[in-house]
Length: 116
Length: 112
Image (tube, rainbow over all chains, first blue to last red; front, top):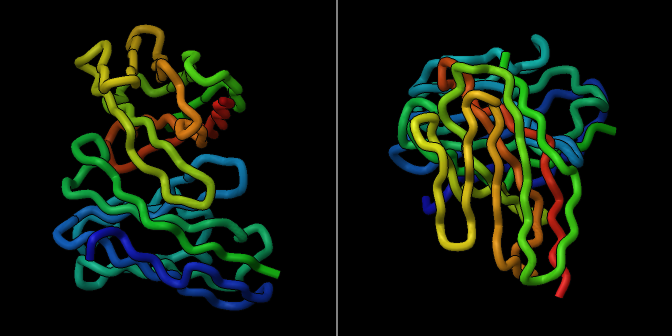
């Protein structure tokens, strides 16, 4: 596609439920990133994939968060036992090159998660 | 790990004035410093970046300066226009280059 695509654009769920957020990066981009953005804050790094593997997952806040990218393209961010504090916009970005300092990050429009 | 501080949090200028946003970073190994613009409800988009082997970079009305010794970098927008109104984020790469760490953002308002 022309840009990074994220679905759903909005997700409302109840506390304790399981949520999956999907990211379809720009075709040919090997690097994929997940960020979380709370209101009035900058994007907060969660995880970085190079191809199929998670090269840096140091930003995942706890073991309720998990992400996969099984074929090196589409990625899914999975959140178990959601809490109200998980409410945020989850941004996905992709890059042609493998490191942030070698290529521009192209962001998607984000998935807005609201946990009631 | 890397920590990025950004100031001011809000900035209001008159059309035609200049705007300056400043950031500091903590990791001396960081070597890439991009600036992103985010309009309300939209995705962040890269507007300019600078690498550690360069002290200044310009692109039309936008310039970025980097002081590696002091570990700070700044965004300069000249002849501001209402369409420059947005939230601006600075960022710095981690030492491994596997992530960008963002500042908290500056909301720029340009009034005509």
